[in-house]
Image (cartoon, rainbow, N blue to C red; front, side):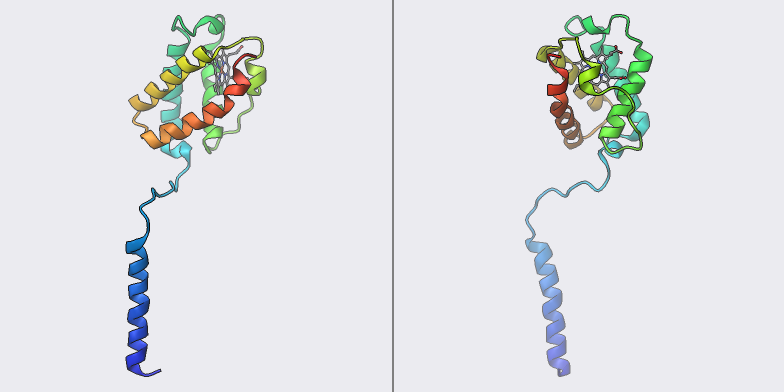
Length: 149
Ligand code: HEM
């Protein structure tokens, strides 16, 4: 290869590289951190759970199943569950969702009330829309194990 063809080849390679970057479609990049981290880690998650469990357990539309329940224990268990589901370092050791809600006959309205408070708590704690939606999707998938049991 002459010096001239070598530098032409190098130029071609460089422009191909830049060309590829410039022409890449603008799809949002997949997050590189776990959802747990994007929720703000343990400190923020604890505050979020404290917030929404406190609200859902006193709202007249959703409070009926919380009578006599130890809220401190429940909040700790929900934190561990969400931490584990979002890729955090916790190992959830409580009951399965079906067992935990067995006999409660929870309605989809009660679930919706909880969902609203979860969303509001996440917003108050500065969690980004994309990350809120990711958690919402995880919770939606559990709805069938929780409602009408
Ligand atoms: C996808 C939705 C839900 C998830 C992921 C969830 C998660 C949990 C978790 C992790 C526990 C603790 C279980 C244990 O410590 O063994 C729990 C218990 C409980 N959940 Fe839920 N929950 C959901 C929906 C609801 C709703 C909509 C209500 C009522 C409005 C509710 C009321 C309760 C109550 C009252 C307990 C305490 C049961 C007891 O200690 O006797 N949950 N839930």
